[in-house]
Each structure stands twice: as structure tokens, then as C-alpha cells.
Amino acid sequence: MIKIDINNELKYIEKVRKINEGKNIKYYILTMGCQLNENDSEKICGMLENMGYAKTDDINNADLVIYNTCCVRENAEEKLFGKLGEVKKLKEAKGTIIAIGGCMMQEKHIVDKIKKSYKYDVIFGTHTLHKFPQDLYNAIIENKKVTDILDIDGEIIEGLPIKREDNIRASVTIMNGCNNFCTYCIVPYVRGRERSRAPEDILNEIKELAKKGYKEVTLLGQNVNSYMRVERERGEAISEINSFSKLLKSVNEIEGIEKIRFISPHPKDFTDGVIESIRECKKVSKFIHLPLQSGSSKVLKVMNRVYTKEQYLSLIEKMKKTIPDVRFSTDIIVGFPGETEEDFEDTLDVVRKVKFEQIFMFIYSRRKGTPADKMEEQVPEEIKHKRFDRLKALYEEIIAENNKEYIGTVQDILVEGYSKTNDSFLTGRTDSNKVVIFEGDSDLIGKITKVKIISEHMWYLRGEVIKELRLEKN
Ligand code: SAH
Ligand code: SF4
Ligand code: F3S
Image (cartoon, rainbow, N blue to C red; front, top):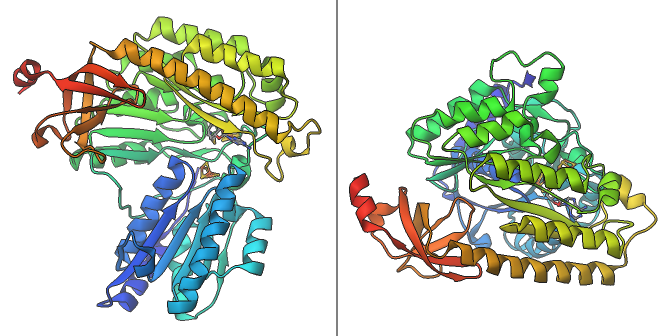
């Protein structure tokens, strides 16, 4: 593992801060894509606030606009081009600085297109996040267009300032990149090879969070449960904490943290050790995201997912037997090349059998440079959409069924604050990530509270705080 020295880059934070001093300068940031990108954006915000920028949600008030981009599906890319079209007017009117970063910038054809047809000041990639202050400095001082993309691999960046979105729940990236090369997926090309942060850096970060009053952490990575795998194979995992199962146990011991989640694991890395840690560790959520992608063994093979329908289902069975009250969410792609009606029925079959609490459903999107893009049997758009609608209908049936099972149960809810849609209710989530709203005092915010579920409303549950238990706890 190569930790890169970022001290030189961080000096630019001070330089930009001096330029900005006393100027009341504002930034606007839009983050697309997954939680890893959101976590990167928190670091961008951390750097910016140290550089004297204040955040604004009104793009028209911003001196600097940052887009942190995603390229996992075509619609994410279209979104950026739409935004770049809009921000052009702002730049022409008041000279707004435009910075574009993230996964999409690691694609050469996209950077070429932006350079040719759009306005920008800084383009930075996923491997140059730490150089953002320097790039911004060069753009402001020298009035240059800066493109700073690297294709290197294996490096770990530690020590960037961070400005977190929330003060109860925090995300902690534990590994970067992906080595799986699922044939539909662009991520390994834009995020580089799998590499894990040192356990002591992760644990120190979480201990600091606990000290600041954070209650929940989500461990992030494209393949979290293969944490330290490549390092182990290369003989570089020197700490005793050299696997995901051991990391979970160590995080579980951190005082103050009450809930631990992780996303995304891969079914192939769900070892007995990981299952055992989930069962044993009281704080680890029993709500597991287990990406299925397809229920057809034939499609899974072409996707390079390295498990079959039967192996997936027996993993689910094993976890249900080992971990009391375990529940599942998943990701499913509809319309992968060569997917027949029969293959799709296999997907529906797995959905019926597992009764997922949450399904993230995606229509297959061709990604330039991936093997699946070159496959001949692309499924027509109309069929993809029809299958998507059928999957969605089944999902809604299952949610309604699952929801009924909650009524009358008592759930431990980490109270997040007042509901955004109705501020006379508090809101929080069950372990299985279902939103629950209920009446209660503001002193419950940030605490785990027992709530009895009284009714279900498709996308949320209504509950009542159990008063006696709360008094006992106090
Ligand atoms: N590493 C994670 C997440 C990857 S991206 C994992 O393996 O689960 C999140 C989801 O986007 C994937 O799980 C997959 O369902 C979906 N996805 C990835 N590439 C896609 C594509 N080309 N078209 C449609 N969906 C895609
Ligand atoms: Fe993409 Fe597969 Fe890696 Fe997930 S595991 S990021 S789907 S290549
Ligand atoms: Fe998108 Fe990059 Fe995440 S491509 S899904 S933002 S890793």
C-alpha cells in the first residue's frame, strides 16, 4: 500500500485562502453517483472551506461551481452535459469558475468532448482529488484551463480535511477501486485497482467521529468485504486486522458508535468469517445489501459475477440460519445483453424467494470500453422497459407484504431529526433502513429509541415512542 505525501498539495489550501481573505467567496457543489462520490465531495467541501469558501445552495450566488460526476449509467452522463449547458450562461455573465471532477473525468472521450464543446476551468479525476487546491490555484492565478487526470493505481490518500453532511451518521471509505470487472461495469476503469486503507487509519477516523458524537458509521467501498484481500495476497497486510471480518469486530469495539453499516459487499467475498462477525457484533446492522444483478446463472456467468443463482440463494439461506432477523436489499440490472424472457423470470423468481426489503433497479446501460458494450445480443429498449416495469410491480407487491410484518413490532430507531416533509414528526430508520416517523421531543434526536410500529404507508412506517422503556433507559 502506497500512502502518498499530500503535504505539498495541502500548502495550496493556504495560498488560496490568502487570495480569498475578506472576500466572502462562495461555492456550490453538485454530487452525482454513489456514496463514495458523496464521501469524496465531503473532502472537496473540507478543502474548500479551509480555502475560505462558504457553501451556498444557490448556484446563482456562487463564485465557484463544482460538479462531482458519475458515469455508471448513461443518464448520469447526460445529467452533467445538461448542467454544463446551464452553467455556461452564468460563466458568461459573471465569470463563475467551473470545476468538474469525479469518475466521468477518468474517461478520455468525455474529457475530449468537454474540452471541445463546453466551458470549464478545472478538470480533475478520482486519482487527483488531493491536487484540487493546487489545480484551483493555477486556474485562478494564472487564468489557465487546468486538466489534471492521472491513470495511476494503488495509491491511498490520507489526511484530507473533511466537512461532513451530517452530524450523527458518517461514511468512512475503507477501500478504493475494484478488481472484479463485471462485464457491464465502468467502475474498475475509472476508480482503478482495489486498494485498502490501513486499519489504524480507519479506526482512528471512526474513534474521532465517536468523540464528536457520531452514532452511526457506514463503511464504504466498491467491494467492502474484500477489504485487504489484495494486500493479504501480496503479503502486505502487516496489521493483525487483515480482513473485513476482523475490521468489523474492531469497529464494533469503538465506544460511542452504536450502529455499523457497510456498502457494497460482493456475494463471492461473503466468507463464513464475515457472516460470523455480523452475527456476533451487536452494533453491526443485520440489514445486508447483497447485489444480485441477475437471477439467471447463464447471465451471471456472462456478467462475470462468479456465482450462480443457486449459490446466491444458498448464501441467503445460510445467512438467514446464522443471523437472526437478517434482512436484505439488492441491486438488479434488467436487460443485460442476451437476457431472454426465461432469464428474466429467474430474476423475478429470486426476488419472490428472498423478499428483499429494498431493490435498486437499473435498466442496463451500455458503457464504452466495457466487454458487454461489444456483445451482439443487445436487448431492445422497449423490452428492457417492459421488464423493468414488471420487476417494479413485483417489488411494490413485496414491499407491501414486508411492511405488514412490521406492524406491532418494536424497533430500535436512531432518531435523525425532524421529518423534512412534516416537521411535527421526528424521523429515523429501522435497522432495515425503512423510514419511520413518530411524535416525540427534540431531546430524542441522536439517540436510539424504542418505537412501536402502528401503520404502514408503502415508503414509510408510522410509529409511537414507547415511553416506559425510554424512562427505564434514562
Ligand atoms: N460495487 C458495487 C456498486 C457498483 S455500481 C457493487 O458491485 O454492488 C452500483 C450498481 O449499478 C451496480 O450494482 C449495478 O447494479 C448497477 N450498474 C453498474 N453498471 C451498470 C450498467 N452498465 N447499466 C446498468 N446498471 C449498472
Ligand atoms: Fe462494478 Fe462489479 Fe466492481 Fe461492483 S463489483 S464496482 S458492479 S465491477
Ligand atoms: Fe458512479 Fe463512480 Fe460511484 S461511476 S456509481 S460515482 S464509483
